[in-house]
Image (tube, rainbow, N blue to C red):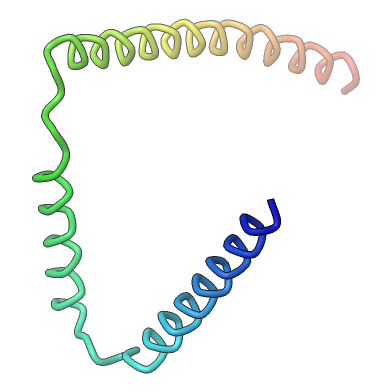
Length: 101
């Protein structure tokens, strides 16, 4: 157990050192890249992620569509209820205001 703790502490120290080096490198390079270069780097990263990410199976795609349809139906019910209750509340507020004026 003591070895695990020592190993963990050593790994954490290496991570902190790497993190500090990365931060100082970012500070040093700040302002060197133009916005266009940063945008190209971002697009390269996105392209890489799309290549690495495997395509969803038909089942996963169907599941995603069903989840979005369910979410959209719930939001429509929520909005209808909100509009209905909102109108009733507005009518009550108007009645109270009319009675006090």
